[in-house]
Image 1 (tube, rainbow, N blue to C red):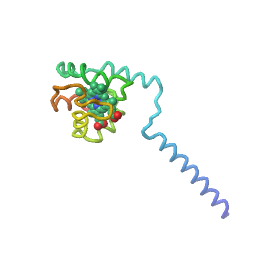
Image 2 (cartoon, protein in one colour):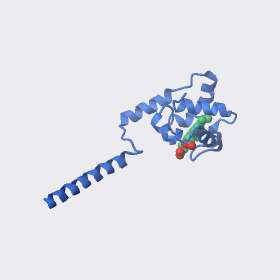
Image 3 (cartoon, rainbow, N blue to C red):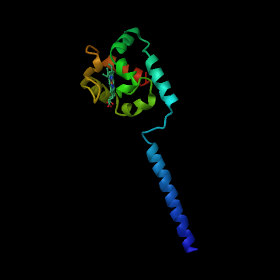
Image 4 (cartoon, protein in one colour):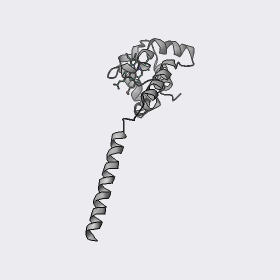
Amino acid sequence: MKISLMKTMIVRGFVGGFIGLLAACGEGEPVMSAEERAAIVAEAESLVPDDPALAEIYEYSCYSCHANPDSGAPLAGDVDAWEPRLAKGMDALLESTINGFAGMPPLGMCMDCSEDQFAALIRFMSRTE
Ligand code: HEC
């Protein structure tokens, strides 16, 4: 009786630990098929802001990286990629854009963009407009 109880506890502990491990592996690294990835890239390549003036700015600056899967930038429209960035808050994202951030050059290659325009571009790319 005592031993079987212990066995149950060990088995439960093992299974629990295993499930915990699986959950930890899944975190931050969602399993995505090549097709899903291709769809996200195709969408990023086709998305353009509705506002023509903003669209023009976007196409000569952010687009070259944020619609390019090899750049390492969170892609336009890729809500999952933007989620952890948005969690920092808009002020932090504006600061990253203006000062540069890791692989991104200062001002995201838009030398004459205003803060409002940067914020609008970030909202457009992260689908929080
Ligand atoms: C030359 C390539 C390039 C251009 C142009 C570019 N970005 Fe980026 N951007 C990146 C890369 C790469 C990252 C991811 C950096 C990292 O986390 O390693 C990034 C990340 C960001 C982030 C997230 C920053 C953070 O704190 O997590 C924002 C916001 C952003 N870009 C906005 C913009 C905007 C707005 C434009 C256009 C005005 C733009 N970017 C143009 C390459 C670029």
